[in-house]
Length: 278
Length: 186
Image (cartoon, rainbow over all chains, first blue to last red; front, side, top):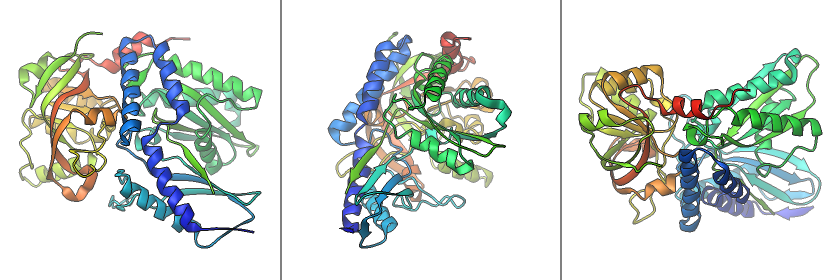
């Protein structure tokens, strides 16, 4: 067994919170620059220019690129040969508490009914899996509400098949319009159970922008959906244009013979994913 | 692209009536911030027959909840939030004289009807461009509901705050016009 200190986890989480908020993912940065070159709408091109200028300022000045610094979502891979010296979730929450204070990030977490802010952006949402090895891998994916609120889950009938999936995904994006801050990335979960497909959709967003699923059938579906979505004409911020989505990422899992769950998790252009390995 | 129109806030009836969907604007003057939690309290005040914490006539409300400012800074990052969350409260404020709103995303039919009826205007700022927009904010002070933290009502003084007119007093709608222009029907 390898001893890992929860203090190290707290320190790493603090740093991840701040760097995720201020430094745009390099893959998203490249995708936005490429989109600005290709965009046909003059206003759309200008909006993409402002988005690019914004993340350049944020990175250079250490400011959050978006005021919605999100609810803190983590994916933790815990090696089965790791011995922790304290409670994992407490260590993560303490890191969030410190990161959001030290980084001057917005605290955006509240009681669901009373709407009273918890004041320190905790509790974090943590998805943990046990893996081989003696390392702890922590991925952070803070999520703003503008895009999260436009996400959808539907239990389709198996008879609806691929066409049903396409129309549900495209309709979700059409209804969202300018709300989720397009250009967006779509994480789509297909199959599993009610909760599994939601997690798959979120996990799909962890892939670098534009990477393809290894399954050729899903690659085709990703390409078809991206074309259909960009044909909607929503464009940057919904002002009209060719760039509505930069990528569609699908993750799939076997499901019940009577089910076809589909989840669509929308992510805005502020791609914020960072990871650390201890 | 056309040159931006410079407008001052509070907005005159004349200027609010002249703006058209698709116009780029640079706003200088005063903006008040409010999100849904603050809107809810404003409506509760009105229901109780009390006065609002600021004179709403001619004002522009900016839908924003900024990040905390570092010591010595005026404000943190401050981009627009989704306007649709305020739809339930907005027509009542427009009736009382609210002239402009800045946010992101589409408004409800009730809000659009109210904008036309009272010759108001809805504008969008670029969502997520919070570090860029911050540069146009020169002063910020809390005027009500400090307990709401980022959702408190702030009075901002802005110079050349960039926005785009989405819904104008004559029923123009940039979202509809833009999508119609670039939609491909397969």
